[in-house]
Structure formats: C-alpha cells, structure tokens
Length: 164
Image 1 (tube, rainbow, N blue to C red):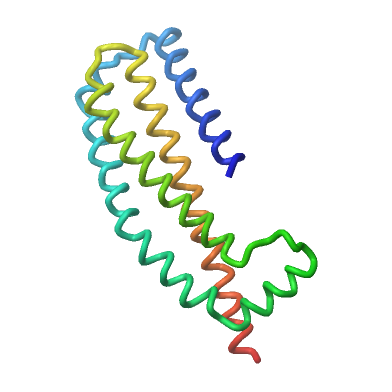
Image 2 (cartoon, helix red, strand yellow):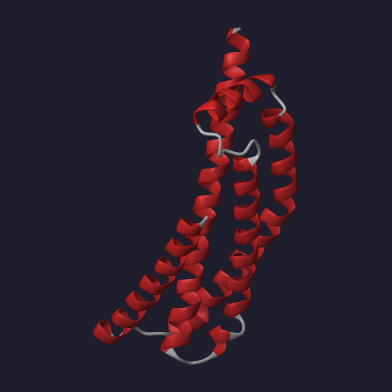
C-alpha cells in the first residue's frame, strides 16, 4: 500500500512538472483546457467515481462468496500459510476494497478540482488539475490490475475444482 501511495505522489509530481515544462518550452495554448478538456475531465471522473462506488460492494461480495469461500482456496491458503505465516486470508480482498475506496475518493477529488481549481487562469492550476487526473487514471489502472489478479485466481481455482 505504501508503494502505491508513493507511486501516486511521484506520478503527480512528474505530471505536474512535465506540464509546466511543456508550457514554458513550447508556449502551449492553455485555452484548450478551458474549452474542451476541463468539462470532459469533470464529467469523466465523476462518472468513474459513481460507477466504482456502486460496483465496489458487488465486486467485493461476489468475490468473497465465489472465491474466498471455496474449499480449494482455503486449502491453497493453508499451504501458503505454512510457508509464510504473516499472510492474511482476506488480505487480497481487503487490498482490493481499499484500492476501490481510494480510487473513488481520488476520482471525486479530481472531478471537484476541475470546477474549482480549474477555473483559475493559471498554468499552475491547469497543471495541478491535469496531474491530478493522470494520478487518478493511474490508480484506476492499479484497481483494474487488482481485480484482474483476483479473477485470475478465481478461474484457476475453478479449473482445479473441475479437474478433480
């Protein structure tokens, strides 16, 4: 979790710096942000936040019922627990739940920033808003990756179950 948090901070700083450097080196026209990009970022991240918030409970409950309650998963976990006693039974599910909550929160903050900070006619406010959007996008990809990892395990266990 700390690695993801540090990665998010680094992505934000790098995105912010790149936008400022591009503006200073290339003298990029910032009117495009106000005319086209700001409203798209606002509605896009508000939609993503709403979608993930409504989907969070469904994903977590469904994975818990269909993956973590399988006897095969329990057997696999007990085998891995002998090798590494510090692992948690619901650890991956808990991580996914936390990532989904953080993703919803960051998406809402990004959406909110577009119609508050984004109104200021400054390259720094534009850079802040776009860097926040790129950071949110990165977290969405991390959440997608976590969901993919859980579903991959689920299908592996279903395959084992059918082969027995």
